[in-house]
Amino acid sequence: MLVGIMSDTHDNLPAIRRAVELFNRENVDLVIHCGDYVAPFVKRELSKLNAPLKGVFGNNDGEREGLREALGVEDEILELTVDGFKVVVLHGTDERVVRAFTRSQAYDVVVRGHTHRYEIAENGRTLLLNPGEVSGYVSGVKSVAFLDTKKREVRIVDIESEEILGLMSL
Image 1: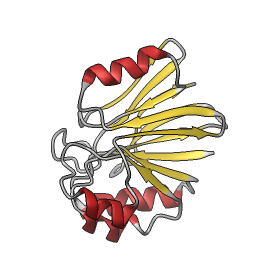
Image 2: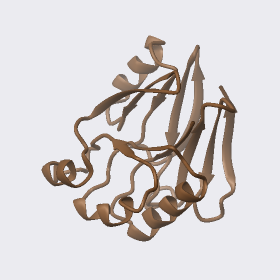
Image 3: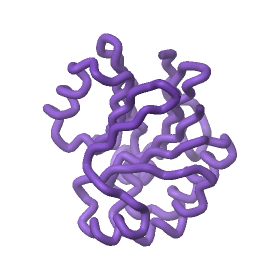
């Protein structure tokens, strides 16, 4: 199964469009959003995904009821089993919570956003994954991640150049 992972889109419709095009071209089976959509009108671009979208709220998602109605966002923490991998998704505003999930070793993958910096790090049997930011507003890098459960690898990709910024085997 191929999972596309994005975060911190911050209403940047052209960047969201580019990420959606990349996910569709790669034929992802699922897309995970780690929060900070910001406003419900991002549905205009996210609805063009050819795969289901699951996500969590971020600290800048003030119009939660609208996001709930538009995109089905329900909570700040989401637990999933993806092709046998136990995954937890959170925005990651509180670093103590991110560390607790990672140290617990209860998950194969902890997926977070918030920092606007892409990251792949191992902690025992748990992989910590931050896809970076789609918006590019803070870091200047517009990136997404792919979790490939068959190849057992994670890669982070710049959505403009499609250059691989990070790669790790599971």
